[in-house]
Length: 148
Image (cartoon, rainbow, N blue to C red; front, side, top):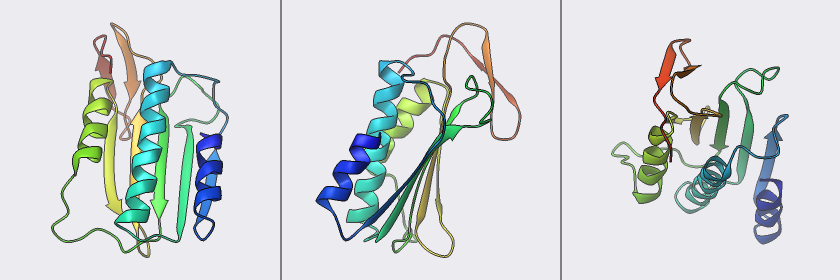
């Protein structure tokens, strides 16, 4: 993740890239690592291309910073033009949403304050029969061996 953001900083020096990466494991498995990487690529590309953002903040942490078994929360926030009234998911965001749903995760896209967009992904760190994870409202999600 850090390498990807360094590359963006080098390629686009006029855009401020801010990373807020919490304490993480080295890897969450190939599928989840790739999902997170592609999500950052898609979110940053959309912020630059569609939002004309000049500042992009990428945050990645566990929902509970003291417990690395809690789901990961990835947020990509920009200061661009925001969402249009007739906003619809394009191919990249639709693919991201499908991959997240397959692993028991979730995606939300909202207008940021005071302007821009906030993309938020919640990604369970593991799946398996009988394993549970709390969602944002504190409800428990039952995962039945889902994979990406």
